[in-house]
Image (cartoon, rainbow, N blue to C red; front, side, top):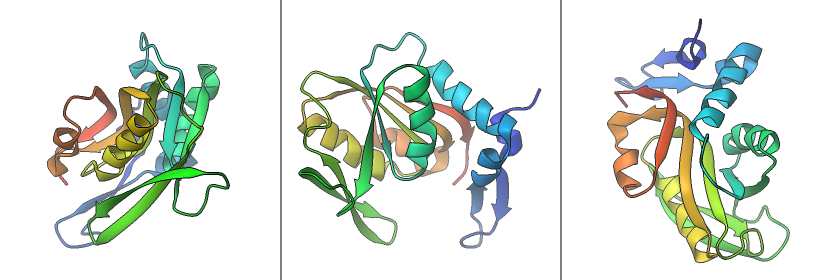
Length: 174
């Protein structure tokens, strides 16, 4: 039986020499790969008590929405600055080359709600760290964070110390 890793395309020396790019589009393109990825995240959530799934655009939407649907939970989108139509809170965070700003609707999470964050990949953990801060600013409690893939060599898990993290596939390198 195949695993999610069997569907991930690895591209050496992209975007620069010495890096192996882990392409998730090949997981999405294959019905079995996609099902394995969603099922793997859902399995990691067995026994977890939560109210909402939060996912960053765009791949957090792809993996978060089916989980929310399957488990009959709400889904809260995290968007880039200026994309949400109502009143928002925002958080700036550093990227490898610059910075970015993400936003949540102010009314998307109620105080005391338990939240699961789902995304496709954890690398340095900067995006998820910013999302955690937004959730907590609104009074939510992050009870688990799930990823399809983890690049352990970039130490994102260490940056998110104190939070329960699960990855379907872990790559030791960068």
